[in-house]
Length: 171
Image 1 (tube, rainbow, N blue to C red):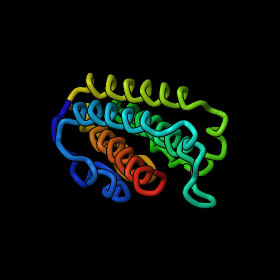
Image 2: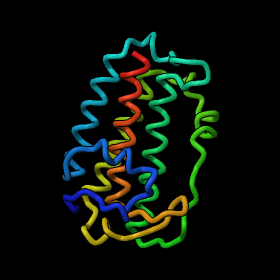
Image 3: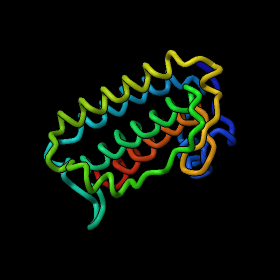
Image 4: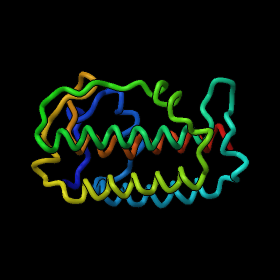
């Protein structure tokens, strides 16, 4: 797969802030390293803190992690459709609705960690075998153009964003 950063035409402007939080060009290496760093950080959080939210109406640590997982799953689906040449425009999704219906508070930390690691392994596997041609195909999601390479960097940047929030506001 391409070892380059996406251009601004390959992702929604909204995600530019996320992508700016990603260092480097080799997305496979970035995703693998991020998986290890994120897992180590999450495993360092005491289990009694996982149901904590830093303010009224904010998500708990469990909900934040499930949000990261859900978004990665949605983003990967978008990348798959685009890479396979499906030009059907894809709608956005409501992250708050997802959170309300995810039932994160009834999940164990171990189940969330296992799902995170499995999701990331699936993401890495998908991008590992993506051809350069497929990585540059364009498709529309949430009313804007994306390429799979743009989506891959969005996944990494989105995670960096939320892990930063956990470190700054939750612990």
